[in-house]
Length: 141
Length: 108
Image (tube, rainbow over all chains, first blue to last red; front, side):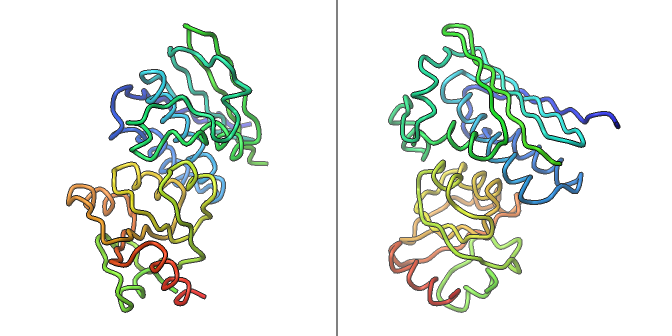
């Protein structure tokens, strides 16, 4: 098996304008690797939703993307407040975002559900007051 | 129908880096996660939202174009960003409903 490709990004916490830079760069990288557009789209959207979540709720974080022959893995890590009730957060329409976030078109309570929708597996590790790590995989095989 | 063909039917181009792209269906919405969750690749996306995140969503969700309804304004800076990111942005002076009906007649 050949070596995995790894990309690392820092997600700026207080900047909505630059939010999406990491996912846009990943989209570009995956395109250069010649991956199918439908796969690129799923990875890009899942990662963008995660990036936006880190900006809204956690003052930023890091994103690591690993591309192997079998799958693409995205690990999003933040030192935010943690998710009090994951089951509730996974429900479409549930959101704790503020009105100012909503006025930007976010905060519809679809972020985590979209991340699950577009990936083959998603694992959430969260500790209140410590942070959240989300690991998602999109299978290539 | 190609994105650039809409220009002959009263749609105005703000950014048209990929006018030859084919339109396949449409999605209407202003809440960005709904668009990312429900819009299909190659859809025309009709919205009245005009912030920078619209360009990111259009690019990542791989829509064929964004159609701004109600004649809403987009800043020159954002138009430049759209061009740089290969995102087609058109504008219609009609309200969203009429814009959708018109588009439907053209791409059916």
